[in-house]
Image (tube, rainbow, N blue to C red; front, side, top):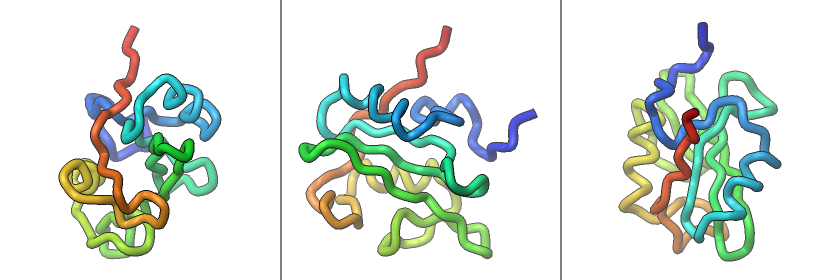
Length: 112
């Protein structure tokens, strides 16, 4: 049984990856590469890890009480995490330091 609401078929969802594991995956990737993982601090939340020109950014994907998801503090609410991710593939991120970035290159889960 998985606790996650995200289907594992979601190619950019890496599950219980740690922050440092996410960074080592992103090290090999170009700017605007991203992945989603379980938050290490809160079971109910997810983190979006992004490769930027400055290095790495980790942003919280939080779920509101009404079930909607937001990215950081300034994002509109979405019904699901895939919708959040899809939106930011064509819009700039609402995150300080990443205003010029979109989610361009999903880091795919390596399936054995």
